[in-house]
Image 1 (cartoon, rainbow, N blue to C red):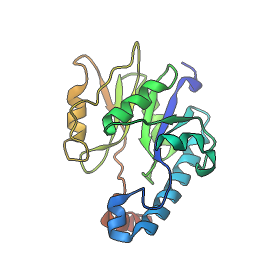
Image 2 (cartoon, rainbow, N blue to C red):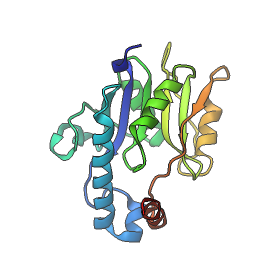
Image 3 (cartoon, helix red, strand yellow):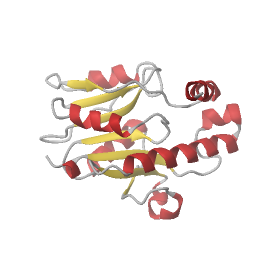
Amino acid sequence: MTPKSNHLIIMAKAPRIGRVKSRLARDIGVVGAWAFYRRTLSQVSRRLAADRRWTTWLGVAPDTAAHDGGQWPVDCPRIQQGTGDLGQRMARLLAAVPPGPAVLVGADIPGIERRHINHAFQALGRAEAVFGPAADGGYWLVGLQRRPVYVEIFGHVRWSTEHTLADTLANLPAHWRHAQAATLSDVDDGAALSALAKRRA
């Protein structure tokens, strides 16, 4: 499997004021939340897309934003997320890229580094799935080997709860092996933003 057969999908919303990080906006205001998201989207996507060990794709919402290259910080191929809940949109993105292992991450996880993505692809050499757990019971990364075919694993998941990762793991076929990447945290509210600032200090 050549490096370019590895596909990284960054799931991202168009950085528009009042349309991103709604929970964070309740704590710090819509402009502050927009500025945080725009900055994080730029830093994460530029950092990860610069790596030649995989092909980077942007999985974008709303769908019309796929045709507006001016609002995205990197010039990567773009895929429309489409409609449905988070699981349906993730499944659509993971099925859309060409053959080869695929890893999907969110654009609002400031701590993502290239080494995390490389570790996930290495894990897919020996496991059918890999997850990057989040401290709240969800996950910031999911990767699938997608061989010999893509299998959808996101049905009946209680999204945005402490059960999200456990529900997804319960959907894996019984014979699958799964690996675990590093635990990282997203920034969904003011408390998480303050914790991030303290870690960086």
